[in-house]
View 1: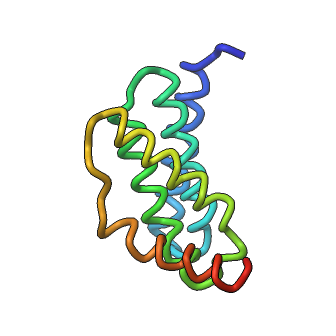
View 2: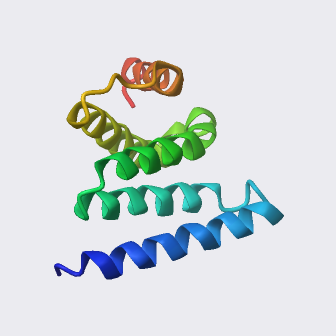
Length: 117
């Protein structure tokens, strides 16, 4: 609706809340924390902060990776979206992607393709 600043504030609050909960129980809301962090990245992108958006989506991928590697079918759509955003933002900034971050994810995507998933 064009209310990017309000969306950014709400996303920042959601990430802060998830980080505080993670301190008490790190694995409990890992997926939700990753999704909130990815949304923060999207809000930053809409505000013209591609650098901040890239940082947020990289963090979101790091948070979602353990779940994706154990139960890929449960979060494949989100991981795919985050990886596409990460790649696009890296390219927009003229940066190479972090191979260490993406390598296990790419390998899992390949396994999923081979198994027909």
